[in-house]
Length: 305
Image 1 (cartoon, rainbow, N blue to C red):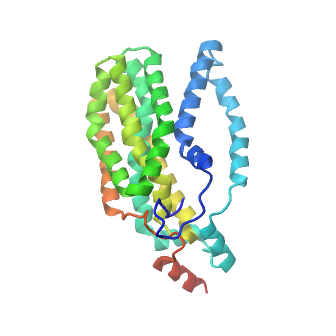
Image 2 (image 1 turned 90 degrees about the vertical axis):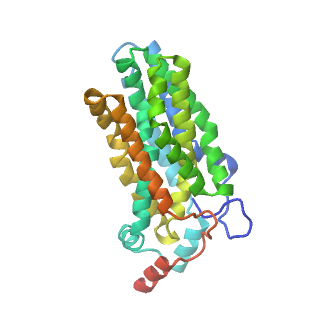
């Protein structure tokens, strides 16, 4: 989560091993793939009533795995230098809201099109295909599995590509693509043809979503200085998740019941438009120096001294 890219002209943090960086980027598609595979398999072999309860209970094991990983994460070299200097932010959440309010809002705006439509494309689409189109449950499920498998490649690819061409162009491309693809997505679904349904899901997820999600972690982190980087990226990320992803499914269910698929397409387009505007207002960050002390950070240091 640093300011470095594939350019040797600037100071950069130590790179993590290639495998660890790929696994980190593949978290969402891997989780989506494994979760749906487990559900698919459990529904085939377990009696009704246990087909969803057993995977849910088994997921508790992931809590231990996540805790193990989190406790073994190392701080970035840039933050280690801050700790050694004794100039950490005393109240990082308050400090980031006070010194980087614009970037917090921009991170929230950029997260909306990546997060909200994702739940429409991978969760709501399953009920839409069965309830509205009258097709079998496996049609949508297999489409999501295909997109998740492809995402294991596309997410780290777009993340690596952003080291070369920048975060902003890729993020802008993904949000504009989803904006323009909102209606065609449903048109392809409404054909009722399985290959076209799968194509719609793959294009929306692997082209629209993944071009944003690939560079997102680095982009959000680079919007903030070292002393408040974690807090700034987390606040922008999590607050947008509440309003975008958290509400996407119930809003979509309400819209389809009262206004038809066109209203959901408009809903997706509006979320994408918010992100397009946010990206246009944000600056490019991938060429910056992660070790540099920005003006906002100098203000924090002077206030704390």
